[in-house]
Amino acid sequence: MTGELRQIVEGVALVFAALIPIVNPFGGAPVFLAMTGDCTPELRAALATRVAVNAFLLLFGSVFVGTYVLGFFGLSVPIVQVAGGLIVCGLGWDLLRQETTVPNIGTAVGPGASEIATRAFYPLTLPLTVGPGTISVAITIGANHSHGMRSLLVNSITELVGVTLVAATILVCYRFADRMLRALGATGTSVLVRLSAFILLCIGVQIFWNGASTLFESLPALKTH
Image 1 (spheres, rainbow, N blue to C red):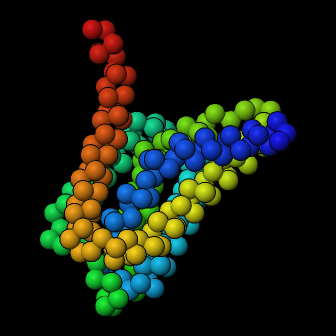
Image 2: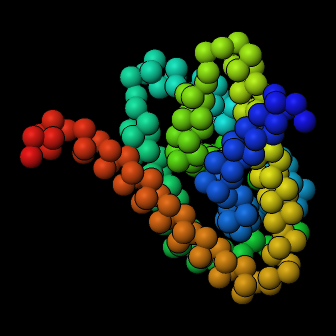
Protein backbone atom coordinates (compact mmCIF):
# COMPACT_ATOMS: atom_id res chain seq x y z
CA MET A 1 0.00 0.00 0.00
CA THR A 2 1.46 3.32 -1.07
CA GLY A 3 1.75 6.24 1.30
CA GLU A 4 -1.03 8.23 -0.39
CA LEU A 5 -3.40 5.25 -0.52
CA ARG A 6 -2.79 4.57 3.15
CA GLN A 7 -3.43 8.24 3.90
CA ILE A 8 -6.73 8.06 2.02
CA VAL A 9 -7.84 4.92 3.88
CA GLU A 10 -6.92 6.40 7.25
CA GLY A 11 -8.61 9.69 6.34
CA VAL A 12 -11.82 7.94 5.30
CA ALA A 13 -11.84 5.98 8.56
CA LEU A 14 -11.28 9.19 10.51
CA VAL A 15 -14.13 11.06 8.78
CA PHE A 16 -16.49 8.10 9.19
CA ALA A 17 -15.55 7.57 12.84
CA ALA A 18 -15.99 11.27 13.60
CA LEU A 19 -19.43 11.61 11.99
CA ILE A 20 -21.22 8.27 12.48
CA PRO A 21 -21.54 8.43 16.31
CA ILE A 22 -23.16 11.88 16.07
CA VAL A 23 -25.39 11.03 13.12
CA ASN A 24 -26.23 7.74 14.89
CA PRO A 25 -28.50 6.21 12.22
CA PHE A 26 -28.91 3.09 14.37
CA GLY A 27 -30.54 5.08 17.17
CA GLY A 28 -32.39 7.31 14.71
CA ALA A 29 -34.05 4.38 12.91
CA PRO A 30 -36.84 3.84 15.49
CA VAL A 31 -37.51 7.58 15.58
CA PHE A 32 -37.66 7.55 11.77
CA LEU A 33 -40.26 4.79 12.03
CA ALA A 34 -42.30 6.76 14.53
CA MET A 35 -42.31 9.86 12.33
CA THR A 36 -43.36 7.92 9.21
CA GLY A 37 -46.22 6.01 10.82
CA ASP A 38 -48.69 7.29 8.19
CA CYS A 39 -46.58 5.98 5.29
CA THR A 40 -46.79 2.73 3.37
CA PRO A 41 -43.60 0.62 3.12
CA GLU A 42 -43.01 1.96 -0.39
CA LEU A 43 -43.31 5.59 0.73
CA ARG A 44 -41.11 4.90 3.75
CA ALA A 45 -38.44 3.43 1.45
CA ALA A 46 -38.67 6.53 -0.75
CA LEU A 47 -38.32 8.75 2.32
CA ALA A 48 -35.29 6.77 3.49
CA THR A 49 -33.62 7.29 0.12
CA ARG A 50 -34.38 11.02 0.10
CA VAL A 51 -33.12 11.42 3.65
CA ALA A 52 -29.86 9.67 2.76
CA VAL A 53 -29.40 11.91 -0.29
CA ASN A 54 -30.23 15.05 1.71
CA ALA A 55 -27.83 13.97 4.47
CA PHE A 56 -25.07 13.48 1.91
CA LEU A 57 -25.66 16.95 0.44
CA LEU A 58 -25.73 18.59 3.88
CA LEU A 59 -22.57 16.85 5.04
CA PHE A 60 -20.82 17.52 1.73
CA GLY A 61 -21.73 21.20 1.88
CA SER A 62 -20.74 21.48 5.55
CA VAL A 63 -17.33 19.92 4.95
CA PHE A 64 -16.40 21.83 1.82
CA VAL A 65 -18.16 25.22 2.08
CA GLY A 66 -19.60 25.36 5.61
CA THR A 67 -16.85 27.59 6.95
CA TYR A 68 -17.32 30.10 4.14
CA VAL A 69 -21.12 30.15 4.51
CA LEU A 70 -20.93 30.88 8.25
CA GLY A 71 -18.32 33.56 7.61
CA PHE A 72 -20.48 35.17 4.92
CA PHE A 73 -23.41 35.55 7.32
CA GLY A 74 -21.19 36.43 10.27
CA LEU A 75 -22.23 33.35 12.24
CA SER A 76 -20.15 31.19 14.55
CA VAL A 77 -20.37 27.48 15.30
CA PRO A 78 -21.58 28.12 18.91
CA ILE A 79 -24.51 30.14 17.55
CA VAL A 80 -25.43 27.23 15.26
CA GLN A 81 -25.19 24.86 18.22
CA VAL A 82 -27.48 26.97 20.40
CA ALA A 83 -30.16 27.37 17.73
CA GLY A 84 -29.91 23.78 16.56
CA GLY A 85 -29.90 22.41 20.09
CA LEU A 86 -33.22 24.12 20.79
CA ILE A 87 -34.70 22.55 17.66
CA VAL A 88 -33.46 19.08 18.62
CA CYS A 89 -34.88 19.53 22.13
CA GLY A 90 -38.26 20.44 20.69
CA LEU A 91 -38.24 17.41 18.40
CA GLY A 92 -37.32 15.03 21.20
CA TRP A 93 -39.95 16.52 23.51
CA ASP A 94 -42.68 16.16 20.87
CA LEU A 95 -41.78 12.50 20.34
CA LEU A 96 -41.88 11.84 24.08
CA ARG A 97 -45.36 13.34 24.34
CA GLN A 98 -46.86 11.35 21.46
CA GLU A 99 -49.62 9.01 22.55
CA THR A 100 -48.44 6.27 20.23
CA THR A 101 -45.12 5.92 18.47
CA VAL A 102 -45.56 2.57 16.72
CA PRO A 103 -46.15 2.92 12.97
CA ASN A 104 -48.95 0.96 11.34
CA ILE A 105 -46.95 -0.71 8.60
CA GLY A 106 -48.72 -1.65 5.40
CA THR A 107 -52.15 -0.11 6.13
CA ALA A 108 -51.44 3.62 6.03
CA VAL A 109 -52.53 5.69 3.06
CA GLY A 110 -49.46 7.91 3.11
CA PRO A 111 -48.83 11.57 2.38
CA GLY A 112 -48.59 13.15 -1.04
CA ALA A 113 -45.45 13.64 -3.09
CA SER A 114 -44.99 17.28 -2.07
CA GLU A 115 -45.37 16.43 1.61
CA ILE A 116 -42.85 13.62 1.23
CA ALA A 117 -40.29 16.01 -0.22
CA THR A 118 -40.89 18.51 2.58
CA ARG A 119 -40.84 15.96 5.38
CA ALA A 120 -37.74 14.26 3.97
CA PHE A 121 -35.74 17.40 4.61
CA TYR A 122 -37.42 18.70 7.76
CA PRO A 123 -37.53 17.16 10.26
CA LEU A 124 -36.25 13.77 9.05
CA THR A 125 -32.94 15.01 7.64
CA LEU A 126 -32.52 18.22 9.63
CA PRO A 127 -32.33 18.02 12.61
CA LEU A 128 -33.14 14.33 13.22
CA THR A 129 -30.35 12.81 11.11
CA VAL A 130 -27.92 15.65 10.42
CA GLY A 131 -28.23 17.99 13.39
CA PRO A 132 -26.21 20.99 14.49
CA GLY A 133 -23.68 18.79 16.26
CA THR A 134 -23.01 16.87 13.06
CA ILE A 135 -22.79 20.06 11.03
CA SER A 136 -20.33 21.63 13.46
CA VAL A 137 -18.11 18.53 13.36
CA ALA A 138 -18.28 18.45 9.55
CA ILE A 139 -17.36 22.14 9.37
CA THR A 140 -14.42 21.49 11.71
CA ILE A 141 -13.22 18.65 9.49
CA GLY A 142 -13.42 20.89 6.43
CA ALA A 143 -11.59 23.73 8.18
CA ASN A 144 -8.47 21.58 8.57
CA HIS A 145 -7.63 21.45 4.86
CA SER A 146 -3.96 21.59 3.94
CA HIS A 147 -2.74 24.31 1.63
CA GLY A 148 -0.69 22.08 -0.70
CA MET A 149 -2.41 21.00 -3.91
CA ARG A 150 -1.66 17.28 -3.49
CA SER A 151 -2.67 17.28 0.19
CA LEU A 152 -5.82 19.21 -0.68
CA LEU A 153 -6.73 16.62 -3.33
CA VAL A 154 -6.11 13.69 -0.97
CA ASN A 155 -8.14 15.33 1.81
CA SER A 156 -11.00 16.06 -0.59
CA ILE A 157 -11.12 12.44 -1.73
CA THR A 158 -11.09 11.10 1.82
CA GLU A 159 -13.83 13.47 2.92
CA LEU A 160 -16.00 12.68 -0.10
CA VAL A 161 -15.69 8.93 0.42
CA GLY A 162 -16.23 9.25 4.18
CA VAL A 163 -19.39 11.32 3.74
CA THR A 164 -20.66 8.84 1.13
CA LEU A 165 -20.18 5.93 3.55
CA VAL A 166 -22.10 7.81 6.26
CA ALA A 167 -24.99 8.47 3.86
CA ALA A 168 -24.99 4.80 2.80
CA THR A 169 -25.21 3.72 6.44
CA ILE A 170 -28.18 6.06 6.94
CA LEU A 171 -29.91 4.55 3.91
CA VAL A 172 -29.47 0.97 5.12
CA CYS A 173 -30.61 1.72 8.69
CA TYR A 174 -33.68 3.71 7.66
CA ARG A 175 -34.58 1.54 4.67
CA PHE A 176 -34.78 -1.64 6.77
CA ALA A 177 -36.02 -0.06 10.00
CA ASP A 178 -39.43 -1.73 9.54
CA ARG A 179 -37.79 -5.16 9.77
CA MET A 180 -36.45 -4.17 13.16
CA LEU A 181 -40.00 -3.22 14.12
CA ARG A 182 -41.30 -6.67 13.21
CA ALA A 183 -38.48 -8.33 15.16
CA LEU A 184 -39.05 -6.23 18.30
CA GLY A 185 -42.83 -6.21 18.22
CA ALA A 186 -45.14 -3.33 19.13
CA THR A 187 -44.16 -3.12 22.80
CA GLY A 188 -40.43 -3.39 22.19
CA THR A 189 -40.53 -0.80 19.44
CA SER A 190 -42.56 1.61 21.57
CA VAL A 191 -40.03 1.30 24.39
CA LEU A 192 -37.12 1.76 21.97
CA VAL A 193 -38.71 4.82 20.37
CA ARG A 194 -39.37 6.43 23.76
CA LEU A 195 -35.81 5.75 24.84
CA SER A 196 -34.45 7.14 21.57
CA ALA A 197 -36.64 10.23 21.95
CA PHE A 198 -35.31 10.81 25.45
CA ILE A 199 -31.73 10.40 24.24
CA LEU A 200 -32.51 12.83 21.40
CA LEU A 201 -33.75 15.34 23.98
CA CYS A 202 -30.57 14.90 26.01
CA ILE A 203 -28.45 15.36 22.88
CA GLY A 204 -30.30 18.60 22.16
CA VAL A 205 -29.60 19.87 25.67
CA GLN A 206 -25.93 18.90 25.34
CA ILE A 207 -25.60 20.65 21.96
CA PHE A 208 -27.28 23.76 23.36
CA TRP A 209 -25.03 23.76 26.42
CA ASN A 210 -21.87 23.33 24.35
CA GLY A 211 -22.74 26.38 22.29
CA ALA A 212 -24.03 28.45 25.20
CA SER A 213 -21.00 27.73 27.42
CA THR A 214 -18.66 28.74 24.61
CA LEU A 215 -20.56 32.00 24.15
CA PHE A 216 -20.54 32.69 27.90
CA GLU A 217 -16.80 32.15 28.07
CA SER A 218 -16.30 34.67 25.29
CA LEU A 219 -18.04 37.46 27.21
CA PRO A 220 -15.57 40.16 28.29
CA ALA A 221 -17.20 40.55 31.72
CA LEU A 222 -16.56 36.90 32.55
CA LYS A 223 -12.91 37.08 31.51
CA THR A 224 -12.17 39.82 34.05
CA HIS A 225 -13.28 37.70 37.04
